[in-house]
Structure formats: structure tokens, C-alpha cells
Image 1 (cartoon, helix red, strand yellow):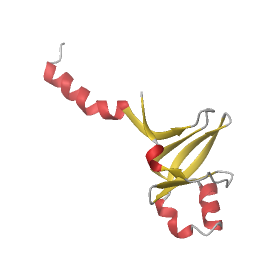
Image 2 (cartoon, one colour):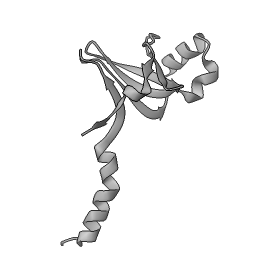
Image 3 (cartoon, helix red, strand yellow):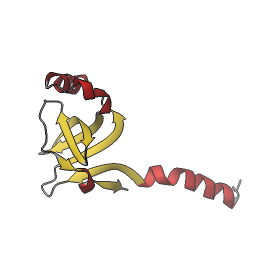
Amino acid sequence: MKLPLWVVVLIYLSCWPAAVLADPVLAAQNGDSLTLHSTPCENSAILAHIVATGGGHLLDRFKSATLLYRGQTLRSCWIENEGWVYSIDENGDRLEPLLKADFKEKTI
């Protein structure tokens, strides 16, 4: 069975954005990277670190992230404030603030 061209085009157009665009990533020359995800931060260890450092009132604004640091993949969470990205990983370590504008959409 051959699908009509308009069906193929409709399927392609509905799937194309998700297949081409991924989460924004900032990659360093040494191979380290921070990938920002749009899903809420749900990692209990990270949330506990945020609360312990006085950021409990901001918990609902944190989103999940993936940090690749020296070949190790760490779970992380991030928040944006005035154009800057602040992140904290599962060990409670915080990166220096990064400009949100420096993040690029990762394409496949």
C-alpha cells in the first residue's frame, strides 16, 4: 500500500521539530558540557542541596540538566535568572554562572 504524498508530508512535518532540535547544550573545548532539559528537577539529593543552601523557595523553578565533567556524567539541575544559568549537581557542587545566550540548540 502506497501512502498519498500529503500523508507522508503531514507525518514528516509533525515529527521533524522533535527529531531535529534537542535540548540546549554548552560544550567546553575540553569535552565537558552542560545540557539543559525542560523537565522539572526531581532529583531528591539535588533538591536537598538546594534547600540546605537557602534556595527552598525556588525549588519549583529548577529544571533538570546533565553535566559531563571529566568524562563522568552527573545529574544536575539548573535555574535561569536575568540571563544567567545557575546549576548544581548531585554532589552539591555548583558551576560558575553561565550566560544563557552561550547555550546552543543541539541538532542531530
